[in-house]
Image (tube, rainbow, N blue to C red; front, side, top):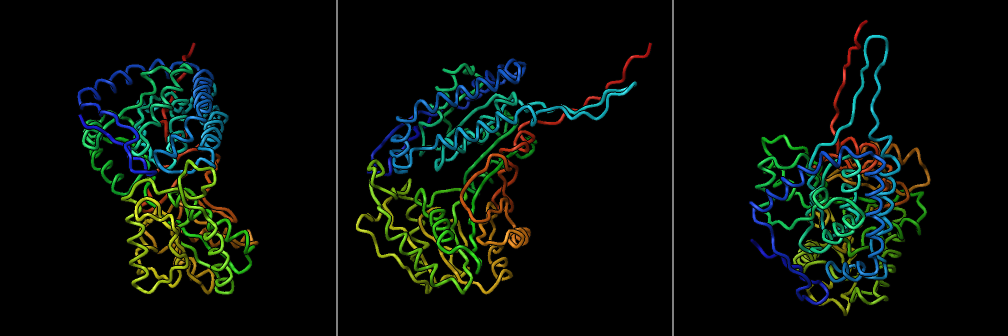
Length: 459
């Protein structure tokens, strides 16, 4: 066994510890879950949906405890109220479309044959959730997987060690059987072993590119389905006809919210040269107004990064960029302690030779570059190994759609950023990963097609 330890970014203290399961104990737990799945799948869809939504409601009832707990574990300021709004919105939408998403595809029912395609659950779905939005990212898969008739094994990141426990407690209290929705604590080696043995029928992982590669290596030869949302370097582009104030406010918030620790946060911005100077001036003014500090303080607008290791990477990218000729526009905040509390930064004079414009930063820093036209913006936006979202700011919808068609990305936003619409498929391309969550397509990925070709008896 291994001890998992959550170190609070607030003060470096140990906030929580949990012991991991041994390989044998994990195998036994998964066997119990597999044995319980068939009975769960046999329940009516309406009953499964009702129980899942009761579990969601029970999580909401814990929100007053959850919000400060998240601040302690990963540093998000309490002023933002936690994640229940998005958590509930996503689960509720998937519940609303369950009948449609899981409906049989009727081909024909004539005098001789009845032919149709059913959507049947994979069986046991393994959800490996990240720390940055631990409730919302988990529910993306947990809710539709359970509603579709799968059993779920949930593993959360060590940084948000207590989230899975809370979710399981809430869902069990609401009536979802304990074996059907199981929270587990596992180390990396045990996780890889379980996947390599084919003990899961589908794996959903949100995390680093390296983590996704490890999952695929472990699953090699097992034919286990994978849904992977990995790294990102999401671009924003403000065209010359953009509403300047709205573009600056939207893109800078998307770059800095949650201390830049957002899967679809904006990490690089391209601005038409006619707006560039005004855009940068307004962006700097916004960022200088942030209050960096203790996330438990209601006045704090920017909390610490979740881990000192993450902050070191951001500082390294900024230092390298400045050494290579970039200009930093934000003076060091007095609260910057050289550790998890990190000054948000805006950089100009950046190029794609710099890691800050190429590698995932996942912190409160953004580089801003001027561009001549759409062609140059498209070339730069596509000059990345990642493709999760792209944000375009313009008054011309047709132009935005045309530029969007040329961008290698999973989602195209116009005049907004850093938002997940549960009616749309959440997906990525290139090194960001594969698969798709939420929407009707999310149900298709959490089930498999099963065809029926029934010849009617002749009299």
